[in-house]
Image (cartoon, rainbow, N blue to C red; front, side, top):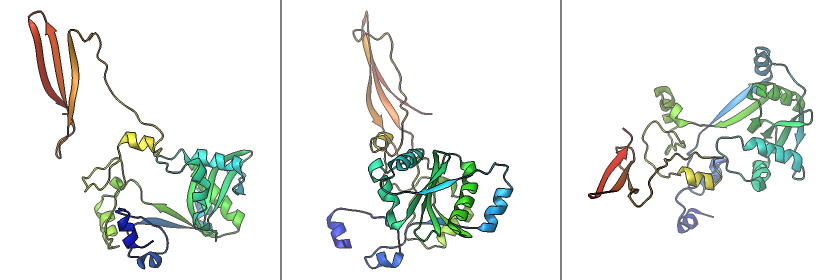
Length: 265
């Protein structure tokens, strides 16, 4: 598939991960950013020594497609993430991308986490554990398991509203990015919106586990004496959303009708 085919399909933007020179051939430019942490045997040993936590005996089970029990357990841990995009059906398949291996972290008979590791066992692409306090010890045990004295961990940038400091923004500019995409549900700074997903759509697409809906209840309003009606939602570029409400009340001397706009002060 080339750029012309993509345009004909009305696709505005594609985001790909991998070797940049492969995609430059098709007209793509670098537009993403991620952190790469390098962990050595010494740093893990000293880091664990400074923590007051009881080291445990962990087992690492290399997952195969037929290991339904451990894959189910890993997927249950994955669903604890704030945002989830994989279904149970495609969960293990997506973990196998780039020929990566996935290990279930087992303590006793219980799966307490999983590691998604590059085929060369040099980098961890994804990790999820039940207790984050155990992560340094799990990494230490995994390095001992594979006989490695050095391991990399890849992490994408998250919560961009926490990265708006002058030093961070200056560092991003040094990469000379074609553009910067800010994915967040809690932006502090107004950005040019290219796509917005409301809470209900996010829930329907199973990107979030639950949503909370706030409302109000009108009591003792029979409908024969009056009614309360939400006419429309008023949107503005520089004001919070407001609601236009109509109220009609029937009294002995006639019907009184009024409307007003309500919004957050």
